[in-house]
Length: 130
Image 1 (cartoon, rainbow, N blue to C red):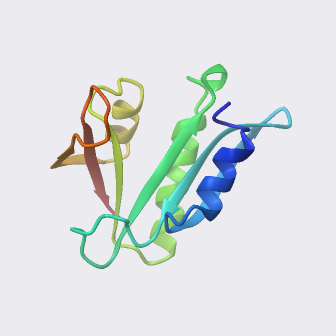
Image 2 (image 1 turned 180 degrees about the horizontal axis):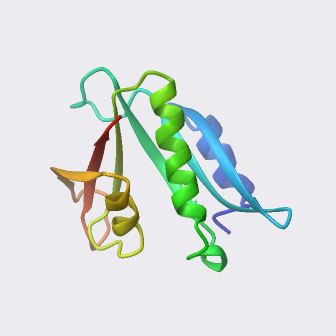
Image 3 (image 1 turned 30 degrees about the vertical axis):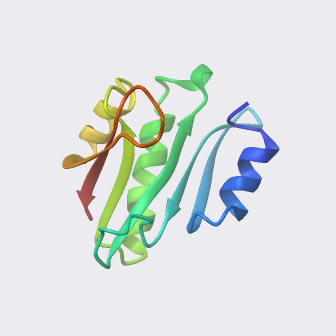
């Protein structure tokens, strides 16, 4: 279970990914979604001042209820308040649920694509100026 699996949380918190903040959304006493931010970004080609959303997840049972939008808005607000200038996120190029959400918050594809993760679909990097 991606939301509540202990191994997922151990990896995110202690896995050496540079994660500096994690926020969760609760629904009826259960974790319904979360995001994690690495600041600075883990990408070696990024200049100073860039943070990265490492994970943004909403339980499928809670899709279309505004949780993803609220989590993303919170990530943007908190990252901006911490003094970061740009926020990036990698997502699958055919992620039909997430792409419109990121677009609605001003994220744009920056031309970066990675295909080395062993998936059938490439990742694209999106960014928004804070």
